Length: 178
Image (tube, rainbow, N blue to C red; front, top):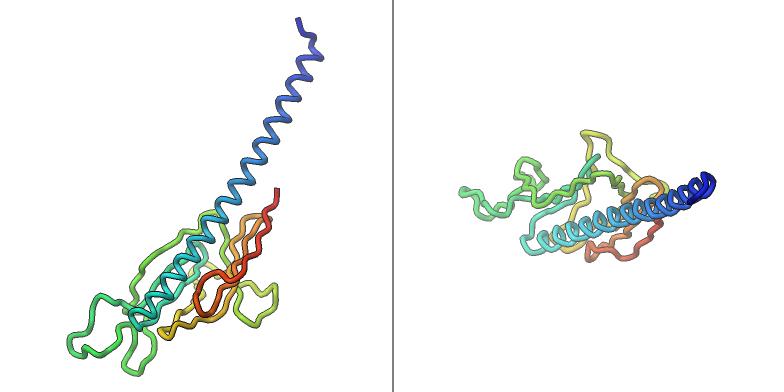
């Protein structure tokens, strides 16, 4: 048979192996969460950019505290009184949220999504508080503001530097802590 010391040693070895496996699993879950979220944000921005050019109407990503929303002017209905009027715009050409149509939503879940505007400092990340939002607009001319979007969870993050001509990821930085 086995002595008490041998049994305890075997249990310690088993626990070490299990803890290493669990650590690897949790880190891969972080990586998967960050990757899925960043891919979805890039897909939403690309779709919003394409729709703004196609429909010649404003579209935008609205980054909120706990989600990202792809929204834009309602392209399905036109005012019968003025068929040339652009939905989502008031008579003076200003944007109005009253005709906003939501096309896609990404719930952030455990990820934290922040945005940095062009020309700001490296640490000037904006995370909206509850009830607030930050808008990244896609113009019908095909241009958008060059921004960086950061998706993070604990010490791991992915930063996407967005191209102002395509609204897709131009460069990406990733740090996945293990």
